[in-house]
Length: 399
Image (cartoon, rainbow, N blue to C red; front, top):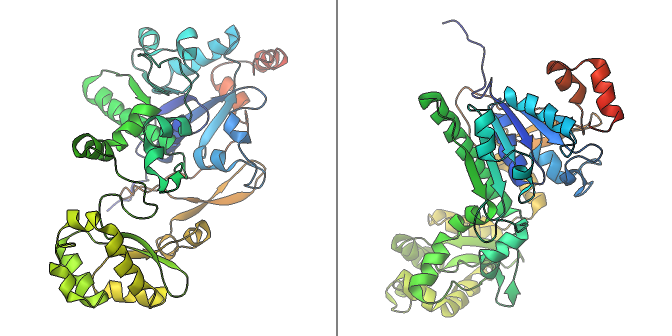
């Protein structure tokens, strides 16, 4: 059979992102991974402020390197009329526009969904905000940890001594994922009906969706799930325990078959299967402290390798508690070829994880992370600006 050259799924789709920080860049990077052309609009000079969150990746920000591969960077002063004129020319040929500007800024610049629909009927606008573009908190700034606090997530995370933030930007990631899936849905809708629908996502509502299980538990149970560290708040036994060699191993019991196997083959206490304190999932949670004492005593008898071996033989899911260094060296990532090198500003290359959704026959694009304004001149030339016009825009600090 003839071999057809691979065409990325989103080849031919152009995305313009007036984006910063995490949520919007995460959404657009995933579109870039699938072959969309993503033009990132940054402030002249410093660019996206996420470039300066840290300098740990050979002088570049770990956040920025993660979120911005395969994009083109153009600098524009959108507070100037001429800068907005350039943006208008970009949007005239774009399929998707993504922005996560400060509250009210997009509307003031004529970049709200309704205004864009009038000028660009086929454009799919996507707005990512803190608490939504309407409602009593529409004008409030929102950052990841603020939203973790407002949704109650922080009250669930940590141990009995106090709450803790989730260790990654979970509200931003949630919003970026919903923006990404919303944009894909809008592209499909436009392709099948001809109608370009706007997409709106807020950090608060994205993370609120992820809070549904503890919300149901609290609403109908009368109390919220307790903070129990690496233990599961509503399932027992499910958590990490120290072994004789000082290493922690986490295991999970999900059903009565596994509970029976744990008692008979690991705890060597078959009588516990019918012990009324532990006979059901709810009973085990109610008697968590007694159960933990029994499990912890057994863990303390063996080193972590032996504990995991016996749990494996009993058909019980378990894992050592890794730190980030162990994660980086994880055999699954290595054996499945999940690392690819990408270039960063300055010419160095660093490893990056391949996107987790594998599409048969499709190789994700793993392009370079752009320097601030690296593609400004090429993009403006493509839009029809002459070298003299580009120089004049630079001289007036529009670019």
